[in-house]
Length: 271
Image 1 (tube, helix red, strand yellow):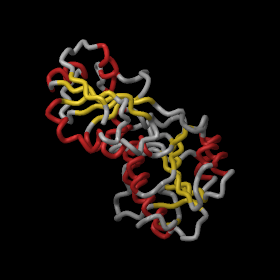
Image 2 (image 1 turned 90 degrees about the vertical axis):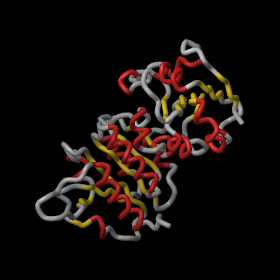
Image 3 (image 1 turned 180 degrees about the horizontal axis):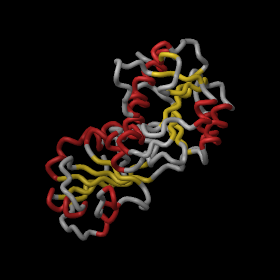
Image 4 (image 1 turned 45 degrees about the vertical axis):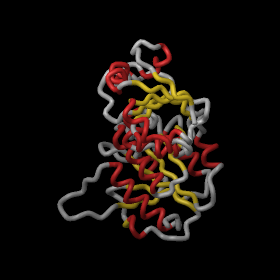
């Protein structure tokens, strides 16, 4: 078990990483901040990024034995009264647990793609600047067995606190890499045997009928406002999600989940 360290002083310097961690105050800080029992239960032991410490509200400690047992013995776990914890964080932490971590060095797109297994499934995201959508995309990616996520420069940070929370820890688990440009992302995909599949309202084929037997699939998804860039559409087969007449709008995370389910089924990834 890790070190359990009681704290009662909101000014304790050991708790500096947890000070004023509202979303707007985390920009530009090193590391990442995760919150909630579900997120940590999913991520600890599977995360590609190292947890440096936890801060837990006293009433929550008794129910965390299973999660804490998966931490390194050297990881400090600071335990504070709820009012002290909220004073440090700058808002009421109703989930009762926060974790501060160190980002892994990460891969570049070429390295990530080179390490894929056979019949791989990856998501290539373009212009996903909303943390709810990106977190949802990572959650879907892990749920449907995707082997990685590629991001263009316009995508937001998958290790931002809100993105981690919406992903229920999946963005800490799923490998990802950021390309220097849309063109560089497409070039990286074109150097593999993955079949590029563009999810678009203009797609001619039904995503539910994507053919089995592919060597692997790269699912290309764009933002709700701008969709996919021309370079992505031109370099891939277009697929669409059929919808009821008179309405053609799904948010990016929902659309990606539907398409990932179809792609994972075609690749035999579902149990």
